[in-house]
Amino acid sequence: MVSPVDAPDPHAPFALAQQAAERLAELTGVVRHDVALVLGSGWGGAADLLGDTVAEIPAEQVPGFHKPVVAGHGASIRSVRIDGDDGAPDRYALVLGSRTHYYESRDTRAVAHGVRTAAAAGVQRLVLTNGCGGLDPALVPGTPVLISDHINLTGASPLEGATFVDLTDLYSARLRAVAREVDPTLTEGVYVQLPGPHYETPAEVRMTALLGGTLVGMSTALEAIAARHVGLEILGLSLVTNHAAGISPDPLSHEEVIAAGREAGPRISGLLAQIVRRI
Ligand code: 8IG
Image 1 (tube, rainbow, N blue to C red):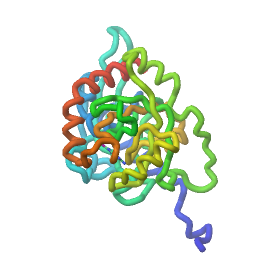
Image 2 (cartoon, rainbow, N blue to C red):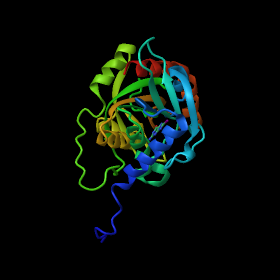
Image 3 (cartoon, protein in one colour):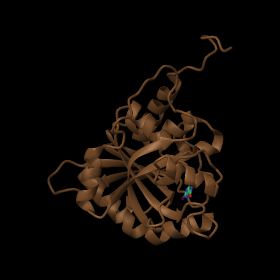
Image 4 (tube, rainbow, N blue to C red):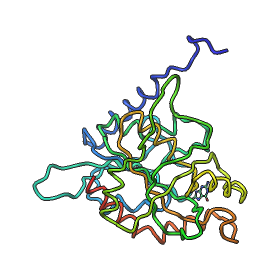
């Protein structure tokens, strides 16, 4: 048994996030950020459309961050001055171009570090994006979907100890309404996070649909839980990059996922930039 004196320090992740935020303020010259974006597969172009990048920092220069492991995932942390109305005070976005996935080490502290750093950097609103598989055959690759809720099938939590956080309206209804003002054709769905790194079997895909899922992926839910815990208002956006296994007769490939992201990139990045300007 782990005695209380041997237990890991539950405050340590927040102290590390505070250190990371201080380092980011030094490196970017921006003392406080307003919005944070985590850019998943396909969403990498959004930062360029948002405004001028005032600083771009290799992730590994910031405490607690490291180089991404997957080809096709970005590597930097950027500070972007959001183009706004003339005369309005400047607002800054902290753009996390890479995330730590649960499948890398099963370390939920590492998974949560980005959003905890964003909160420590002053951020109040967080946009989590991802690429995912679609469970409904009508969700064609290249379709962006608003996340309305999630099902966490990782069996893990980023929270430690008796941290009983309410997850009602985790994905803000207010922010989803703002997104639909920008694009009234956006549909909503329930995102199911699985541990990965393998894709699902067709039987598991049928199971997740029976459970009430719309989308399957390997990120986002654990980050959203950590973000709620530190008080962030969350918008979740998925890009369907492939039909989930068994939905189409074709097998899944990482190349297909990258290609769908590349093809949809300019359109969904424009959408994301417009949404961020309004939140
Ligand atoms: I991109 O079909 C992407 N990520 N679990 N299943 C899971 N993760 C994914 C998928 C998918 N597509």
